[in-house]
Image (tube, rainbow, N blue to C red; front, top):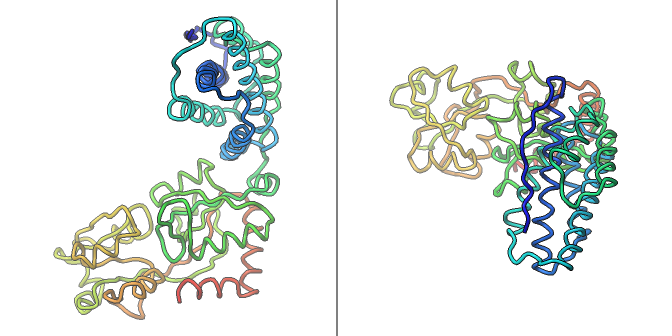
Length: 401
């Protein structure tokens, strides 16, 4: 099977590197169609697979939302790529009818498709910055890096779709127009967000996210995030709103908007019931012999770093199993939100709050989103309605009792 040799070309200083990179990615993705065709030929598979095409476009549209690309223009662009891809594959099929066909091919699912998916995501990340340099586009494909079997008509349609790529003016418009609300959640913080497999989620904020999406009449999509990456993931556009028991703190407010508070609590220590008398104050906790376990990246670690000078900090990556470390004797205590303490005491009879009725901080929780006033207003209006209809109260009671 012939292989297309891709080579670098020197471009004049005036050429935008962003466009060059994007066009090369499109070129590389279409160049892989010879390998796709070879696999389908050898395995007697059809060129057109409508179900797969629908999935590719759906995933591309969701990837594009991270960069604010409108769903219609994203769908049109990747549809044009699929049309071009099928033309290339058909061309190779026609050649192999007359010439010696390939006898080996790289595995489509295991090797080629992951490359296509990766390239598709890279392309989506650069679409919004494209300046539509048609001369560069045509020179790249026609002279420097021609894709064998790609027709001029199909290539032109790809560029026309590329020129028509548009972005949403703001986050609220994106949610309402695309019909999709992407909720970032950690899945490790019961009772707000919990998951065993990082795919399906349960908890207070999961139920409330469903209610929010229903009130906005949009599809709900959960995006797995983590406490160390929460702010960066929001800034990168991976989700529209974080709903995971997120505490409202100044460091986060500098970079994001919060909804009105929907829960008030504070930090509280939890330990073995047999040892509560040892940790009845912050002074007793902050001793060199005390091992305070904490999950990294959130307000629990912030509190430990700020308030405990002598106690030993033990980092535990998985907040879902962290309380077992206390039960198994690998840590002495944990300081976390009082609502989580309450839940864990119900789940683990051997654990108790060492300072019952007290909290070491005052903390409000809210829903965190990008600095979009319209989106914040919509969320606050929903929160007010959910509160007046006792939806918040019933949801909390359901998960705590």
